[in-house]
Length: 264
Image 1: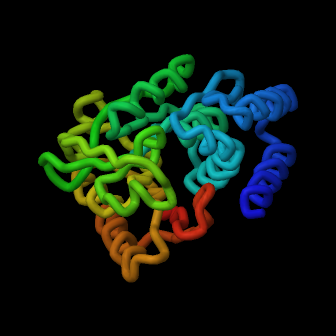
Image 2: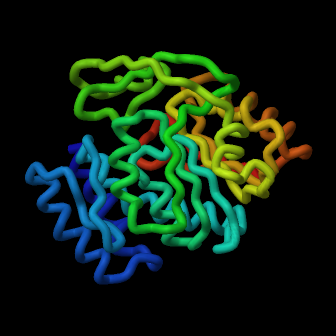
């Protein structure tokens, strides 16, 4: 019953969206049938999107709504830079690029997912893909994922395997500060209009590596089950911005336990 309700919600989301053409809506609806039959790709916004967790592709229309809301709150234009930390297969990156036409720096830690991410955004010249794990300092950390569903990987084992069945894979990954990643792509001094952080539980670590960057706004995933996390994140964001931000909260795509908090 829950899956049927989720499908109905996504169906409604798709057909009421103003920022997606009728042709793209029909293409997605038709290719989704192949996905439900066992495929691993879906036709979205004129390009094939792939994932090793095919059910996650069903949620793609909801990322458009997330992008529309963020663009309005943060006043993102085509001249701006948006940084996508925890890029996954490119759901957010393709959505924000489609809506705003801005430059996107899309950062993903898991090398298995980066190869899929590069394929998914390859025809979009405004998106720069960087394979990097971002944290508070340079170090080696163990990354966890579930075989065949590695798009949900995390440095926190509990978050990586949450609601998933299958064998757990562990790999050692080098972590660097976000400020160092931006310097590496030649944008260390460039003003960033928004940083979106969705790293399955390590969002506070990412913030700790942002010192020195020129950031205007943030969108950060917050787990409502973790007491005090939102307050800690808000305090850190205020320190980075040099002021107390306005705060806007909305549900995260496909989850009832986490929310997206936008700080402007």
